[in-house]
Length: 83
Image (cartoon, rainbow, N blue to C red):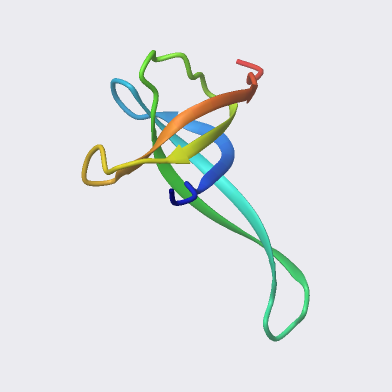
């Protein structure tokens, strides 16, 4: 069995029914300046029960493509947002 990729990020947008946009931040070393810089990427995450709110920290796991741009499913909610 292959290992499923997991991402951890913050919900920045509720993108329609059963879908949330999650912003994932990672830190990498700049190739020339050797300084830590942040890189950002947004993923669409499938939320079957519509339980996500803005600001929630979540863990999502990779799954089969659910739509053209959605290939992650909600695994757990790490902490809830302030809203």
